[in-house]
Amino acid sequence: MRGIFLNSAYFGLVISIIGYAIGVILNKKLKIYFLNPLLISIIFIIVFLLIFNIDFENYNQGGKYLSYFLTPATVCFAIPLYQQLELLKKNMKAIIFGLSAGVLLSLGSILGLSYLFNLTHTHYVTLIPKSITTAIGIGLSEELGGIKTITVAAIIITGVFGNISAVGICKIFKIKEPIAVGLAIGSSSHAMRTSKAIEIGEIEGAMSSLSVAVSGLLTVITSIFASFL
Amino acid sequence: MWVIYCGKEVTIMKYVFQLSIILAITFLGEVIYKLLPLPILGSIYGLVIMLLCLKTKIIKLEKVKRIGDFMLEIMPLMFIPAAVGLLNVWDELIDILLPIITITLLSTIVVMVTTGKITQLIINKGKGG
Image (cartoon, rainbow over all chains, first blue to last red; front, side, top):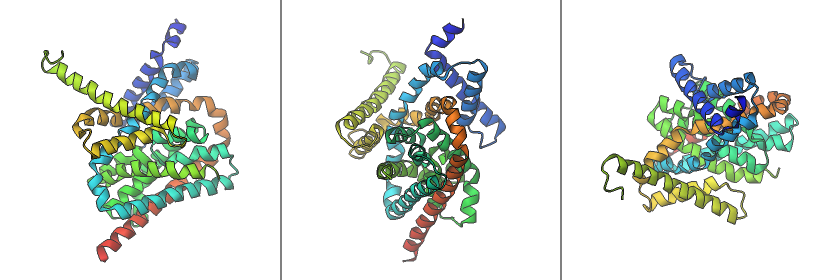
């Protein structure tokens, strides 16, 4: 009986979708914003696999098909980017300088802190993509020779933390300009938090999703050089 | 042939067509990735190609928008398998958990503040001058 379940590739697919559905429902019901659907579903599936003593390999037979769709989904980031092209052109200078500084400091701080903590090169390149959207992050981590699951963990920690702290940090450091707030949230804590920026305001939301795509591109370009460090 | 059917069939074909465009561009991106010796991901090539096609109106926005928005919306679902993979690297993760959390939190704050401050500075300067 067990074998029938485990050998079917659909097991991984179904459990992922059920997990995500539970995540979405709980997130709506509980209204605790750092418990986002992704976090809930990951915890649910890991606990489920541990309780029933199921190997990750069995789960991933079906799960991997979900991962395949990350590439076309990333291509679709072109759509919001295209829709906000006007806004991008209008604030070109501010956006490019702001995001470049953010990306460089992200790499710099990760490099510096990795030295401080004596991390290996593998762990360092694993952390590089942490501020960019998961779709690009996973691919980038693999490309650089990192451990992609740890990259995902770092991205989720970043997203959850960004969600909780974004408003407070912008207040403390007196970042008020809507475009600046949107870019700050988008570049530091990627797509997962873009919804947070949308809650704050329309311009913030637009700038945040724009910065996800742009800083994603910038990170890919610069980190290729950074990976040699 | 599907023109013979009315309403629903045509709509479904439309979505199939939208998905095909997105997948075709993804494929093109992957091919470029294999052909060029650069370590840039196939998805990034695809993103740029899609943006260029939209900008030059080779592909009209409404030809990809519906399925594209849908894909972006259900994206978190696609991250689940990679994250569940933490099960397999748990032993390795435990050893470096503290540094990873510290680095992640600190660099998030640094990036947020720098990006916000610099953008604000440039925008305000533009307004003043």
